[in-house]
Image 1 (cartoon, rainbow, N blue to C red):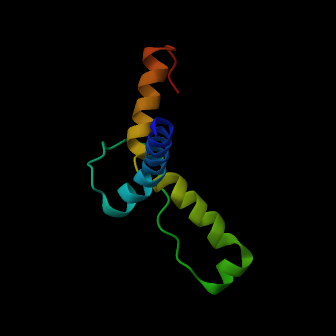
Image 2 (tube, rainbow, N blue to C red):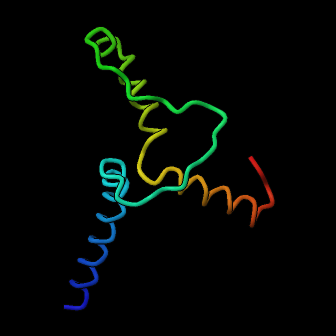
Length: 91
């Protein structure tokens, strides 16, 4: 019985970790810190037939998702704090 409960808890935690970023991206349920970046974030690409067939849309959508997934700003800030606080490195 104990092993079964442990397995259910592990599965629940795994699903929570997997589903939280998309939920954050869709709903914006939790406030995220803002970042000042030296580049423009990728906007949502327009889906046109020619760009879809040629593969341009897929590359643009990948770039958009890389820039706009849920909790990205928070994870970037945590990574920066770890790099500065532990490794004494700035990037």
